[in-house]
Length: 68
Image (spheres, one colour):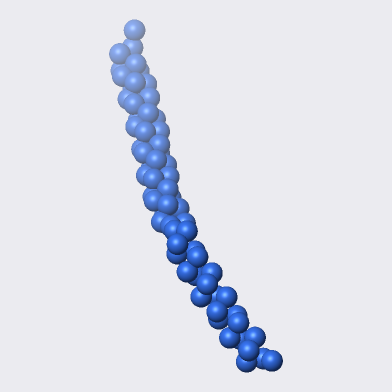
């Protein structure tokens, strides 16, 4: 039994596993950051949407007045 060869194979396998763990951790980190960004993006409340809608309607009405 060649212990040197077995040891080298185990170390190689350990390195592959450590590399896989690092990649998975990086993917997890990216997904968490993306989730936070997406959560921030769509944060308008119904009341805010209503105020925005009213303001835009008022703006469009003023533009129509100026045209005609």
